[in-house]
Image 1 (spheres, rainbow over the protein chains, first blue to last red):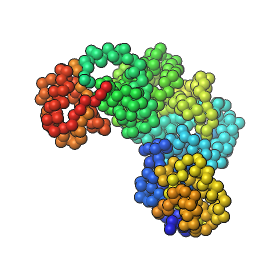
Image 2: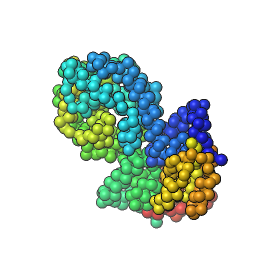
Image 3: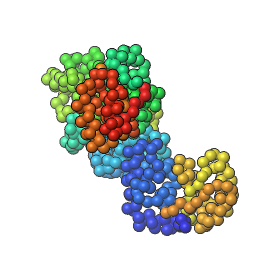
Image 4: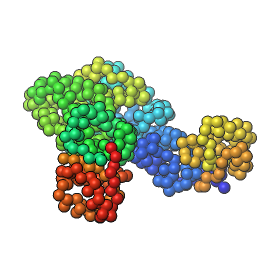
Length: 207
Length: 207
Length: 71
Length: 71
C-alpha cells in the first residue's frame, strides 16, 4: 500500500532531513544542468535514488517543487542578507553590511545563488518573490528613503541607484563564479578588492 | 554524388548569404535553448531545413561551428564597440562612447549578446577571445593607462575598475533583457537612465 | 490525512474533467491533482481515509488506467 | 579541392586509429575528421580528387560502414 498518514510524513521529514536536503540539492543541480523545461520529477527521483511515488508525497508536481524549494531557499537568503542590518543605519554603513552579507551568502551557497540567477527569467520568479520578500523589500526601500532624507544618498531613478549600488558587487561575484574576469583573466574573489570597489560605489552615490 | 569543389562552395557562400545567416541565427537560438551540451549538428540541420551533409560542407563539426560563428559575431561586436573611439580620448568622453556603443550593439543584437553571455562559461570562450581581441584588448588597456597617467582615472585593481566602469551598464542591459529589474519591477531601457547612471560611474572613477 | 499516489492514463482535458466529477463528489477526498507533464500522469490524492483500493476501483470502473505507484 | 561527406560507424578510438592509417596514407586526401559526437559519426574529407566512390570502397573493405550523406 502506498498510503501514509501526514503524521508519519511529518515524522519522516524530521527524521529524514538528509533525504530532503538531497532532494533540494539534486533539484537545483538538475535545474541548472537541464534548465526548467528539461527538468522532470522522474529525472529528480532517479538522481536522488528514491521512487517517483516518494517524491510525490512531498510535492504535488514539478511546479510545486520548484516554487517550494525556491521559497525555502529564498527565505534563507533574505535572512542572511538582513543580518546585522537596519534601515536606520547611515547609508555607507548599511550598504557595507549589505555587500558583506550578500557576498558571504553567495560564496557559501553558490548552487543556490546560480539557481536564483536562472529563476529570474521564469514565471516561477514572481510567485517566489511574492512569498519571500515580505519585510525584505519594504526594509530596503525604507533604507533608501531614509538615506535620501538624511542627504546621504543622491535622489535617483530606482534602476540607476540599484545598478550602481549592487551591479559592481554582482559583477565581482560572477567573476568568482566563472573563476575568470573579463578577457579570460583568472580571478579569485578577495575582500580587499570588494572593499576597494565599495569605496568607489559610495563615492558615486554620495550627493 | 555529394562532392563539390571549393570554388563552388565559395560561390554558394556569396550567393547564399541568406542560408548562412539562417544557420547562424538558428545555431544561436538552439544554443540558447538547449545549452552547449544539448546542441547538435542534427538538430541544427533540422531547424534550418537543410541536410546534415550540407552543414558539414561548411563546418567540420559542432566545435568548429560554434567557434567560427563566435569569432565572426565577436568581430562584429568588437568593431561596433570601437566605433568613434580612440584610446587618447579624455576618460569621460571615452567611457561615454563605450557605453553608447555597447548598449547600441546589445539592443540591436540581443540574441548574439545572450550567446556571448553564455559562452563565457564554456571552453569555447578562450579560443574565440584569442581570435577576436587582437587590437581590442590592447586598445582598452591603453585607454585605461592613458587616463591614469592624465590623472583622469583612479589607479585601481583591474576587476575593481571594470566592475564599476561597466557593471552598472550591463546590469541595466540585463534588466532590459528580462523586461524586469529587481523585485519583478517592469523595466524598459532608456538613454536618460543610462546617462544618469554613467554620471555616477564617472564620479566614482575620478581621482 | 492520507496521501495516495497513482499512475494513470489521464491525458486529455476531457479525461481530466471526467475524473474531476468523480473525485470532487467523493466523500473522503480533500484535494487532488494530476501532474500532466509527468510520463506517468501521476494522480495525487489527499484523502481523509486510507482508501487506496476503493478509489482505484472507482477510477478503473470509469474506464481509466489507475495503478499504485510504488514508494 | 573537394569536400566529401560520409555517414560511418567509426565509434571507438581503435576504429578511428585504423581509419587514420588508411586515410593518412591515401594520396589524394589533404585533411579529414570524424565528428564522434554525431549520431551518424560523420566523416568529412578534404580531397584533391572527386573520388567519393573510391574512398568509400577503401573504407568498406577495411570492414567499416561508410555511406554517402545526402545534401
